Length: 260
Ligand code: ZZB
Image (cartoon, rainbow, N blue to C red):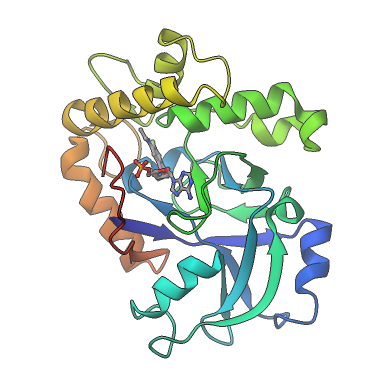
């Protein structure tokens, strides 16, 4: 799986996470949450970024100035892909559990929400996939739409501010079958009631991928009017050229995901 890893710079830490990294990261350094995505062309629509509340994350040193928050497993993979200074070596300076990061404000590259987006909890984040950090695009990802809807509904239960889960969801891609908000459309159409409807969400994801990729037209960003198929590699290259992202690949897995 060839992912685009995106660098979401921390602007303001949640208090618990701040404690966990205190004295371990130089004050002048930037720390980035690094989600892995298969849909770089949707990054305009990021409204938050998910971590698994129970997942343990490492803070890994890239240079004196840059540190990445990802799972140990992802850091090990990255170490063999030229992402850290020395091949095979990944230096962990701190550890932080996902729940401690909730509420952290990060800057999401290309997002229309230039004021920043929040780190929020998602129970279904897999620690064994990607980087364990997942950027949220509720306009085009049914999983993300179901999760932000649930987070806003039960904000108190999740210990978050409701408004963190309610950033505006703007159209990014227009499709003939599902309109310009594919994920909300499919969640409604398939009567998906919560993020726990995993079977229906899997189906919605497949439909969204196919329609978005083969029929989608960009309605936001620099490649407005172009086909998704054409815009996807351009947005990816733009992110890489700007130093806001990099290629990250997942080693072969025994069980291949249906979409992969
Ligand atoms: C942003 C995005 C926007 C994504 C979208 C999808 C969609 P797949 O297809 O099953 O291989 N993801 C990445 N890592 C994890 C993880 N550890 N746990 C749970 N989800 C994860 O899944 C690849 C996608 O799953 C990635 O691409 C990421 O969400 C999420 F509009 O990034 B994506 C129709 C999907 N649309």
